[in-house]
Length: 99
Image (cartoon, rainbow, N blue to C red; front, side, top):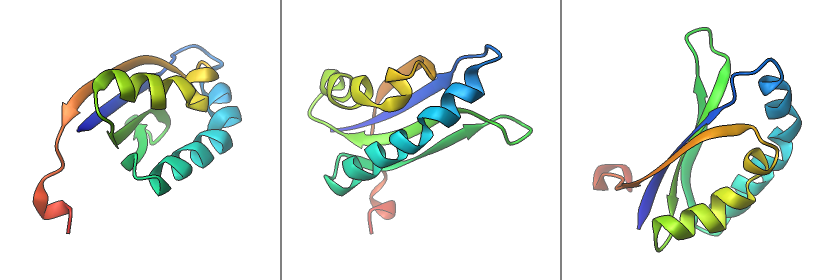
């Protein structure tokens, strides 16, 4: 089953520094999950000035709990306290985008 993960960074003065420090590990983690077929697509959420303020991912896991425990809980952005507000919702990529 597919899930949409919307994860917003903290808003404190050190938030961007935490993101940049954890970013290489996060990208490697996401790349490995993509190769395993667990991540379908993802990217940064930007503010109006183009500054990264969060992340969006579409993942494929058997349940919301699995997406949270198997993906989110091990992501360097979560472990590095980059993500402060996380929402996971059932999602389905439209068939026209799966071709």
